[in-house]
Image (tube, rainbow, N blue to C red; front, side, top):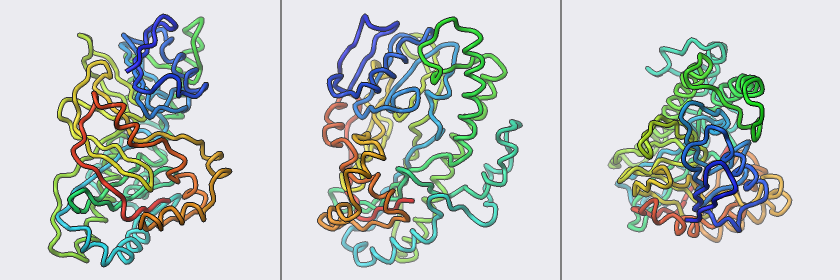
Amino acid sequence: MWKIENQTKVPIYSWADPKTLEFDTKRQLFDLANLPFAYHHVALMPDAHVGYGMPIGGVLASEKYIVPNAVGVDIGCGIVALKTTLKKEKFLEQREQIGNKIYKTVPLGFHKYEVPQKHEFLNNFPDLKVIQKEITNIKRQLGTLGGGNHFIDILSDEKNNLWIMIHSGSRNIGKKIADYFHNIAKKFTTGNFSSYPSKDLACLPVESKDGQDYIIGMTFAQNYAFYNRQRMLDIVKSILSDYFPEIAFEQEINIHHNYASLEEHFNKKVWIHRKGAISAILDQPGIIPGSMATNSYITKGLGNKDSYTTASHGAGRRLGRKDAKRKFSIQQVHKKLEELDIKLFSTDNAGAIEEFSGSYKNIEEIIDLQKDLVEVTDKLFPLVVIIG
């Protein structure tokens, strides 16, 4: 860990080497640590890179204010992972058919279900205008993957056990909530602070009606994202069970990496904003994925207080999406995956290039940088990758 002190209102504890950080990532980091209400210190995870307002991989603690863009636009985005009793060799016999079945069953990209989905969670909606006018879309998007860096992976561990891993979030409603309250926060911040590091980090008082409404909306989006992943997991489990009736499943791990929660740190109750970062309480299961052609990791937290009991959410982007498309071709993507015997199912060549492993940092180095945050319990390698 690196400590950056005396340049900002609160110090910065970084698990990313400051020498490797982009200029814009550093600028956002200093803005974060200069917020008038930033508490104790700001933490930065080893996979950090530039985000909107706040670096991806940043952790902010505050007592009386909440920052919508310190949670992110895809509220509740996260990963669910599940170990099965099926062995890799048995799965490979049916890999092509199973991958294709999942690809055609789960709506990907901008696609959603033609009819509203049913779920107990969808029986009650918060009385917030931004949510109420989106109810039809919310119901039709439950159990859909989306695009970008969201994926469905089938992987194997070092003992050849098969795993399922799904990365997705709150779909369009999370962004609607984030944008709606960020605009309100900008008006509040402009009118109540004479100087402020960045309008992209606009805040709301936690005890205000707008602050409380944001927390209600954020909590709804977090729960929606949780059930969205769970619904897709159930679909994948059902497909695998159709092919292998003998298969059994262990307890799922379903975690967020874009959220805020009220926690106690350094003897005070504070709002911990984790943007592209996971909770790593002592012995808490975690998921740190690599890219489409590299290892992913199941972890358990070590409860490091200096990180606000937090760890990285993945490898972290090395190249922006536009840069990736300029540097790589779809032929390079397919060649690399064929060499590693990974089957890719993708709706869009551009999306596959953007998510190519060359666009991401080295996951092994990222894991090594946070040995004081998490302990690895399982190392996984992809066999099937499905993206929107």
